[in-house]
Image (tube, rainbow over all chains, first blue to last red; front, side):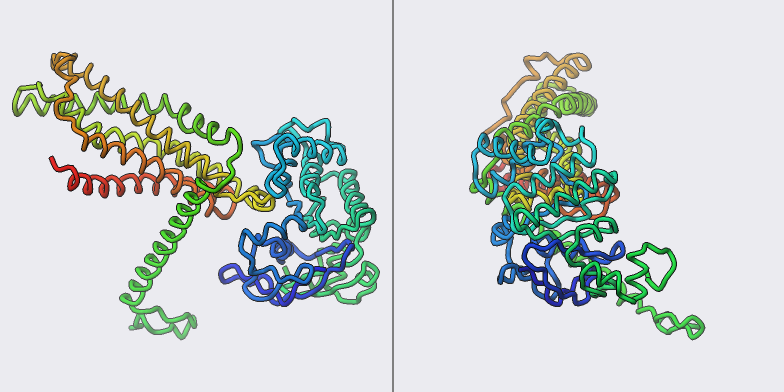
Length: 247
Length: 279
């Protein structure tokens, strides 16, 4: 289980998270939503040590990890993978080399073994034909699938998706949604998804947390979000320009 | 009259501190920035040395960087060092002609100067611009596009993965390029001396003034500059923030700080070796 406990994070004078607390249950598809700049991506980066909270604790499987150094973070990153917003494939490597890198670095596999395993992982996301292509020659949707293959290559318990459907066409976006849903249903992977995509949110989320002005505004199921009479929540989930929500 | 330290009742603005307080604040802030910058730079250097010994390098990564740093700088170094060599010898020849019209020591003095100082310093300043900018831009772009974060997620330390191959390659190729650049500068200077002042090549190519102290000094400078350029530039790249503007700033900072590092190291090493190997 994952627990954020009273997370506070500032960047210089700008206070982004002002005491955020919630739990994520095992095997669920958990969405973090909120306006741009509210600190959604910042929050999930705390889970894998890419950022550290000013105060507060981050718990994964009963272990408080927010004060871990880089070396102690490696096992955490093995079980908690991340798909970045812009895929962030390494430009200088082919797709298969990108997917093989965590296998070599985390598991210490040889180059040949890691490439063979990576090729299988690419096949699983229908990208086997592009194994030897460089990321620059791929479209956004294809890059995203390679990035997902790279994240899943270590069979993580938790996968963090940072706006996985942003910049994708609707068909590619729904395929990514299906993949996230299948991960949870078939392998029990817990997915934490940062997203603005209302179709995704209400299509595949088990639970949702909405961040607003540095705090948790609402935590609940999609049905509870729809039934909530909070004007800020309603404005956000209906995508209205007018309303009480402050930017 | 409203004092500089009083608030304006009309605007309600905060009172401005006296000039000496603001000056102290500025100096204090700059000193702290310098201290933290130096501490971070030292940390990058120490971790680079650690991973040179303990790291697991990617196959071919250092060779690729040697090609990037060395082979791709060859023409640039050749042209600049050749031109500088010609200019230096021509100017030195003009001065010699005015004072003591005897060119017999022109080549020997020039060679001593090249080996002890100029080849390494000028060559490294050239490399600081080309190599330093390249390293900072590449690493800085990876930082702003989260590729460095993705590397960390793959259990690859950015220092080990990105900086160490560049560090090792730079140490080797800076020495190679400086020896090559020095040779080009000497040959170009010799031809200039022959054409402009009629100094025979055999007279110019004298190693009479060269000693072990000069060679050791030149070698120390090659190693020091070869290490400083990737460390300073890599640090600039890794501390990039913001978008493309941040990459631009990082690149500028890398070139300025690498050049500064070469000049400061030159002063330190020259002072130490003049004491160690007195003339």
